[in-house]
Length: 317
Image (cartoon, rainbow, N blue to C red; front, top):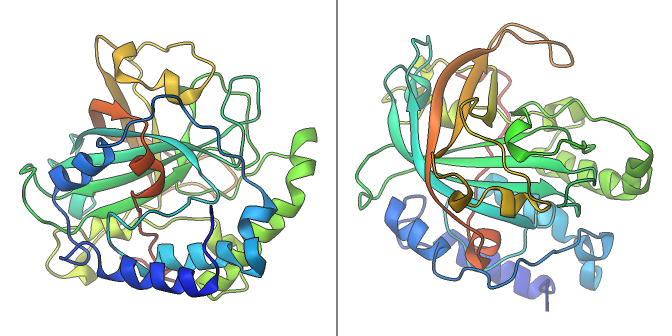
């Protein structure tokens, strides 16, 4: 059964709030060990459907949106990712090398262990389809893989309407997802989009749809900061494949991102901006890099790994 009925959903939420034993903290090794424990033999292709959102006459999508806001654990009991079901996980190191005005793990010299999940929103995963690439990041504020810590998480998407970009590494993934390209195939996604917007508005307790279309960054800028009121946060974040990494031609983006394809290394660039407009250009500055040392497509990557979404703040730190 893909989705639990109402009483089971409540039980799963209760379990999620209690696991792991140190609620809200995890060590890098315990999270990655779980992700790497059950790799796929063959990549699944899970479709995104309205039926999955509302199976058994229950609004699973709104439940999932609320859970993402409320639950801070890095690993949950097995659940379905309703919007980004198909993904691949990446392990590595987050480091900020440029001089920045920011705090936390956007500050100059910040280094931490990193787990990310690359995915596509909705169903398409192959080249030639309109794919909406996504990238969720989990920064561990330590270089000790056994240390239990509270992580800082972020979300980035290139275009929820989907694009024909051939390579995941060429997608400009940002935390501001207000730009949505309309094309003929997106017309058929109208009911899905309506359901998603409704659930996000309910979960965020707002009537402002533009608020739900940005993922604020203060969980990273306050990471390790003793007084969050003193934090300085960039408005925009962009993640894209590093310019010095060769592009690999594969139909499925999960095959493209397998580390074995990159004998000279796989890496992403970290960009930040404060000047610009949401629908227009931004004054991007390259501030750091994510170096990847392992990748895996697995059941736990798709069904256990959790990235908390921060509640919207009118004035983030």
